[in-house]
Amino acid sequence: MTALAGYPRSDGRKGIRNLVAVAYLVECAHHVARAIATPFDDSAHLIGFPGCFPNDYAQRIMQQLGTHPNVGAVLLVSLGCESFDRFALEQTIAASGRPVETLVIQHQGGTRATIEAGRKWVEERARELAGAERVPMEISELVVGTICGGSDGTSGLSGNPAVGRAFDTLVSEGAACIFEETGELIGCEDIMAARAATPALGDELRASVAKAARYYATLGYGSFAAGNATGGLTTIEEKSMGAYAKSGASPISGLIKPGDIPPRGGLYLMDVVPDGEVRFGFPNIADNAEIVEMMASGAHLTLFVTGRGSVVGSALAPVIKIAANPKMYERLSDDMDINAGRILTGEATLDEVGREIHDLTLRVAGGEPTRSEALGHKEFILTYKSFEPLGPSCLPA
Amino acid sequence: MTDVTRNTDPRLILLDPADNVLVLRQDIAGGETLRVAGHRITLERGIAMGHKLACRPIGKGEKVLKYGAPIGSATRDIAIGEHVHLDNLKSDYTATYALAGNQEASR
Image 1 (cartoon, helix red, strand yellow):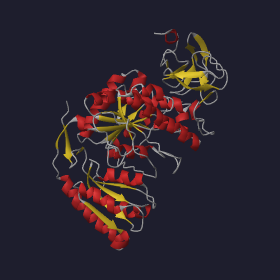
Image 2 (cartoon, chains in turn brown, yellow):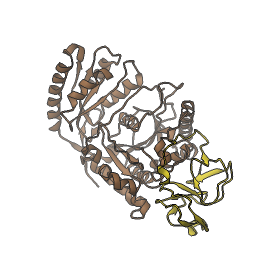
Image 3 (cartoon, chains in turn green, blue):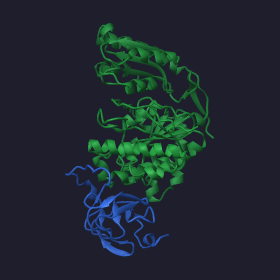
Image 4 (tube, one colour):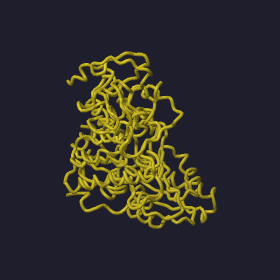
């Protein structure tokens, strides 16, 4: 078994990376924050929230990311007049024992002065973090998310079920695994509910998908992009059946919402569709919005299956990309970590590729860079949403 | 092994015995003749990897089954060997959005 090592944090979790997060707290501070982070390509990652109006969800996601196990220090960049509660955010991060600093552009003396002060702070923190010691880490301390993006008719035949096999192994080893996008589970509600740890949780899983179906019906579009149809998928329920295969065959231990940390190992569904009336637009405007939410729930890394050929990575947490078919793999092999297209050509079985994904997950957790990390991908997007707290049956003991 | 699988071109996969569609594991060119559930079918147009063909006659309004699960309803009668896609299958939940000018699928 691979020996893992992680950076210990005060809440008991361990990080598989040790990064400085540079966070803008409104779009007006985005340029300055980006200019601060840019020279520190590998060690400082840019995150942020663009809105000027307050939002409990965004506040909570930023707090969870500022205390994410892969983050060792945080620089907050504020314009000064936005509504984001920078005081509460700084307090939460400081309470976690991490170095944190807030630079207010209006107080600092403008763009140039803030960039200069910010770079100086980041340089010192990055140097400290580079010398940090790692301690032994168990697989049961890992949180792994999965997503499929740029899906086509091959995703559900090869990459998604192979991730399901990897998830089954990780869950059996005690890791917490998260699948999500209830809008892409429409049509799967009954077979999924049958896997719930308790009947009451099954009802919650069913209700989360029904909510997604209602929400998307109001918006007039499903979670279905034009490229999905080009790739042979005809309906949302067909896409759902393929996406659902990522969850593997383990029992479902719980339902969480973005920012909820799985209480123990097991398989969790993340409900990503907002509660209440339809507000603020589409639940997830692009794949990275979902990756951000899984990171906020503690995901150390994400397994990303793509058929059409997504190239994204993420700030803060590595993304392992799994190509679902040999044609796309040939064109985009530089961007792909795993070629699950070998399942379609008969060169490998689902179990073999599942094992390969599992083993690469452990190597990446041990420090090996993914393709998207090596290529400098650090996508990040966070927008407005609203959620109610979890129901009592969502996390059975 | 079901009869459909035994009597079908190996480039087509039956995902579940209950299914009335097969999935292409690679592109198949227009004009090719292939065996589909024992019938000889000549493709009018090429069909791309990941797309679906009917392996039984499907009546208008009937559920299309893939992975053993309904993935929508037929909007007209579909013959064995026909490409099953946006022209003859619709979601029972939300309508599918596709780019009208995109011809990539039949390449």
